[in-house]
Image (cartoon, rainbow, N blue to C red):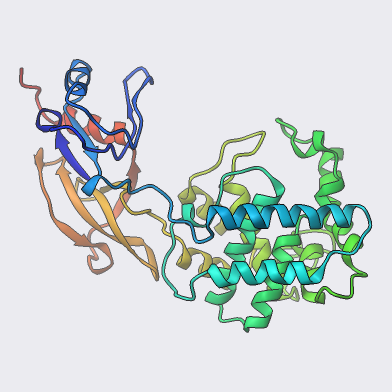
Length: 363
């Protein structure tokens, strides 16, 4: 991603960020291919610089770990399994094993840091949520070096963790406002309901069943339904943490999805296993590539890459220095710079406003 003068647009460039007017009106959306005719439109609104992608490639387009086609297939199969359970018919262990194998075959073995967009689909659907939690749980389990067979059982348990919700009334599940205490108590029953629905299924591993029952337990015993604490199985700890994170970054009827940065900070306040939380932080890009940040030096910069072991100190390229009021282009590896750090994340409007305000307009 690079910042260019509107005057220098030649046509064909692809916007890397939305352009929003001062009154909040969307002028041009990210991924729009610019034309010469847009120049006057931008300049009339005092927009003199825009961010465009390098080589006409959209840097924010997800590169999903699990393809859309595979997700759709798994979603349909998972839905069938939930219905079987609802109808008091045993879940098909062969199908569940196959679904887990498909997911694990597509998930890389590498310890790289991932953009959350590559793992998560922002969809309130129980099945999509279950798939995202399963993918994240598998990645975390591998990060923790759990045995392959255990990773497989964790994946199946994550896929089934919310099966009890299939018999919770939809008007409670999808309520657009805060749940009342009685409604919350009903929601909480999905763990025991789900466990009761599958506990006699001999084809399912006990660990997968335990995950369904205990994915809302917490390290200090404050969770439910058993108030278990540090004696909780690692499989349930992993899915519990991944379930929280995916819920935070998903749109809900009563709130919008949170940015990953905010969600990870909230996760730090949850009573979950420290090694599990650290594995999640090590896996995810705290500052996604091409996001815009402000450094304590007064430099505005774009993120070029992340270190998997230090998410808060990516490699960046500076764009503009607000103190010297000049354009700069310098690569900085923040993990090797003890005196330079990120102070905040910026959006496009905020970035352009800061640059414009720091310079006198020339007519």
